[in-house]
Image (cartoon, rainbow, N blue to C red; front, side, top):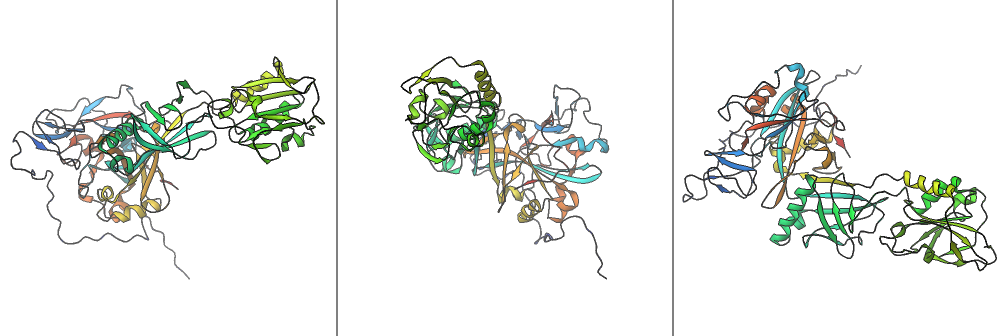
Length: 536
């Protein structure tokens, strides 16, 4: 008989091995130059290594010299399931500032420990990353001992993917996207009802001129922090993009995301249009639909109208390339919809034939009746048809901009979690470690490494910063069972309890934040602890 045993943790994982004796790691490296003024300190939170005078901040405005101690200027953001006081109080760490903390904002009750989550927003870094992450916090979630490793990562290899819901033509695929005249990205493939942009990336951050890198990182920081950014596309449109807001294309704010392509719209509304019109053309820069030729019209046994369309016929009732892309009807460059009609088959068409032409959003629509010469003459649209056009509009979702941060957690960042970084990667792929960015769920891409993607709207405000290398700074947290953390070679000597963390802050002094800020976990986000990662 085979004996089965059940174990928790990382059964297939190589146990971490310690080599030799650990050297002493200095919190602050010795100055590069002995001639540096004595009142200055050298910030070693990033590769720039600013020399900062007392009372001043470094080039990134994230770190400052406070009486000879390097401090992280912003508070570290802590999430709670619910805030008693919506004012989100700012509370100094007792002992770090020499001042007593204010009124207790958490009783230390372990039963409430899974109501507090430490995010990487304002957490600081421990560059170079061979040092443990700033916060390695032990807590309990549903009675299970957990640990969360918290840091602010410095990302050169990162970008933003921007989804813009619009029918308008923004620009040719692969066209350059510019900000303040500098190339900061490109147009990528369109998706259904949306135009996609890829902005930022290491090529623009570090591969071009200094100005290109500076403008790119400023643009990325603004986008990530949910601010509006003005962009222009070579050979295309001018845009204003802001996460969660409608795009503004050539000065006009978009309202509707199309319900589908012309073919889809014909199919969706065919039964409602039956009997109301003898022919319906839904104009679209992708697929223009013609009802009586379309399978939907054939299934309704509608007689052919004799309409002859421009463009390339794909399949019955579906036409490609009826016009060029643009900001007119259905995302084409036409203002007169009749311009896409080649003519009428005199043996089939008849005077009095009723023709409806509409765009995929219903924003453009016109009603025609053929005269004796088989020429469409525009007439007032019947009320029953107008209601169908209104329904097309009602079925269009609001047009929005969606901004996704896409970055890879490199080996150096992983070294802040464990002495054997590949074990962290494997543990994530085995769904044993949850990855979040500012507490927001991060989608982990398949394949090698830890490449994550997160919706910036689900992250706390002002989650992103910059360093002048240039690179983006973004929060990242890894949550797992405490026993698993030990198995993957975690920095166990730097694990502090949640209570200790709330009292004193980060384990290190140099570059540590001096205060914490409470924020409520957004209702759309699952509580970060006790969740598996979003694996691709």
